[in-house]
Each structure stands twice: as structure tokens, then as C-alpha cells.
Image 1: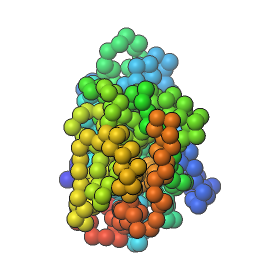
Image 2 (image 1 turned 60 degrees about the horizontal axis):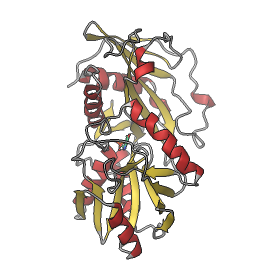
Image 3 (image 1 turned 180 degrees about the vertical axis):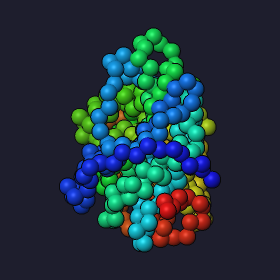
Image 4 (image 1 turned 60 degrees about the vertical axis):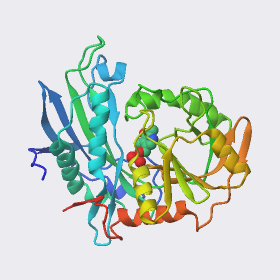
Length: 356
Ligand SMILES: *Cc1c(COP(=O)(O)O)cnc(C)c1O
């Protein structure tokens, strides 16, 4: 059990809910009424509050803005048929947030702060959890360094915030992705496995170049040889070859340990599908496309859920993947995942936290 937090509550004078068209939401642009805020100073977390979502005062010398001591998480809440709010695998996001925190010298967030803040925020903004198929409430916990000091050292103070956004689908069509052979997202010994802000800043420019060539996203390859596939955007990657589900293993510290990835693998194993977590070379994928043994390729992540891939660009050639049909594993697993998330299937893996 999580201990109760002493949270100061200041509600909006008027909800913005009536002004939102839930059938047409742009990802990440619509914010719910409230946010949870906590501060870290003198070695402890204090000043827990739920406030109207809104601007904060930040000093120009705030170190988090200069050196990137900043981490985030992303998870989703859904409504079941009884209108109750269900959060998908929050414990895993909580654990991962503290793994990220450790890597860049941030303090651990106590479970009662993360879970307690999340729970109380969702109780207050429960009407913001949309019910239309394909929509959900995206939850964004994050933490950044707040010392007003521009010497380079770990900050002594931090702010932890959770705000939420009703969201619709992330990608509206199957993806055209390009295998990146020059730029690198992560390197052994680096921060690739952590959800730290700088990883994403560094990925923008290579992704922009690929977008100028007409691709949606990049497939990152290993930083040492550019020979092995890692991940894509904010998604882990999976391939079905000869009825075996293959995905890059997490042994190196360069790949984000996706919770959607783990959920898909768990369901696949539950269905008796053979799963291989290992190194996946570009050559293997290119050969499988040519030999027509590659049945499907897709990305898996909280924001995008399952994103089907239709084209892979590599070495100047665009390889077309088989058409996306209803009987693909990725279609079925997406449907099943949605059912678990909405409480339509028995929660046999213990993935659901219900907000009472
Ligand atoms: C968040 C993220 C993922 C997906 O993780 P989920 O827990 O499934 O949302 C994959 N790769 C990167 C780089 C990410 O930031």
C-alpha cells in the first residue's frame, strides 16, 4: 500500500473540458485542468500540490535548462465499461523513472509521491479520460533540476510534475522508416536506456533529415558498427520472420526498455508464439525482405501503441513490406492490448491499477 500524501489542492475556477472536441485531438496539445507538483530540497520531497495546469516562474539560471538534467515518463489511462479509470502498468513507469533518475544523478522519487500524486490527480481530472475508441489520457510525469546555478554539477533541488493530455492516435498511417547509417542515438556506456531529455534533443536533427527525404522516422542502428537494429523514434521494434517474433535484446544499455515491448512479448508468449530477443542485423532484415520471409515489422510504444511499418529505406533503396491485413500478429496484439487496457480481458498479468 502507498501511504497517503498531504496534498494541497487548488482547483480551476472553471473546467476547460467543455471546450475540447474529443473526436479530433492533436497529440500533446490539449492539457487537462490540473497538474501535480512536488519539490525536492534539503534531501527530501515536500510541498505536494495539485494546481491548475499553467505556467511556472523559472529563473534564467535554472540549471536543468542548461545541462539537461531532466527526465520523463509516458503512460496511459483508459475507461472501462463501468466508467472507472484504469492505468496501464504504472509500477513499471515508476521503476523506470527511478532508473533514469539514477543515471543522471537525480534523487529517487518515493513510490507514495509518484503513485499518490498520479492517483489524486486522476481522481480530480477523471472526466478528462476519453471514452472514444482509439483515445486515452496520456500521463506525463517528469522531473527537472531547479538550482539557480550554472556551474556544472548535479543540482541540489528538483521539481517533479505530472500533467495529463487526452490523446488520439499518434500515427495515422503505416510508417515509412529509414535505417540510419551515420548518426547515433545511443552508445554503449551512454544514456540510451534512460528516458533522459538529451537523448531526444540529439535525435531531432537526423530525424529531420530523414523527414525531408519523405520518411516518418528513423531506425537507429548500433553506434559501434551501424550493423544492428536498435529502435525507432520512441518505439521499440519487432519483426515477424517465419512466424518467429524477433526483437533486439536489451543486454546493451543503448535501448529503452519499453513497457509496450514487454507487453507485446508477454502476450506473444502467452499465445505460444516463438519469441527471440537477440541482436538483429540490418542484413538479416534485408535478406528476409528479399526472400519474402519477413511477414511484418512494427514499432511498439505507449504513445504510438503499435505502429505498422510499410516501407524500410536502406542504402538508397526503399523496400516494400507485405500489405497490412487483419490477420497479422501486430493487428491482433494491438486489439488484445487495447482489451487489457480497458479491462475487457481478465487482468491475468497484473497490469491494471484501478482508480477508486
Ligand atoms: C518511451 C520510449 C519507448 C517506448 O517505451 P514504452 O514504455 O513502451 O512507452 C521506446 N523507445 C524510446 C527511445 C522511448 O523513449
